[in-house]
Length: 121
Image (cartoon, rainbow, N blue to C red; front, side, top):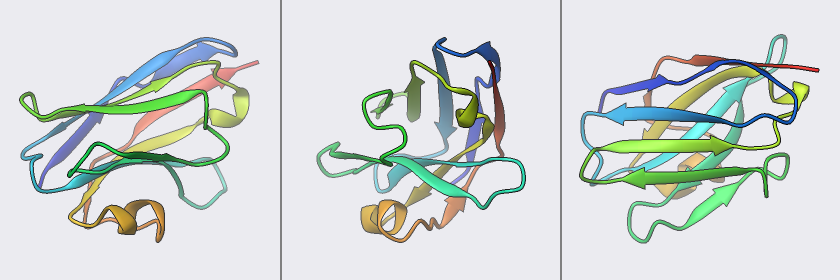
């Protein structure tokens, strides 16, 4: 599975931004987003399960971010609202046959390149 993430940029606190991820295939994997802030370890952000589109979010983004996917277009999105400076990070799209691997173990079999999101105060 090849993944390509895009849509990052520089925004102000309180703004919204949508990240997109194009996948070479999408029907047999669950998808997720992770992020890595400067000087910090990579962390899980959100995941969507392939079987029923169930979603799971990190507590830090719950209520502000929404993950969704379009199977026909093989796209996954991360809608980010009410952005905060602490959301500044490189965001990575990821995929794995196991939904649990994404949100429970914070791991993935496939990774895209990152896209940088910078939120200014």
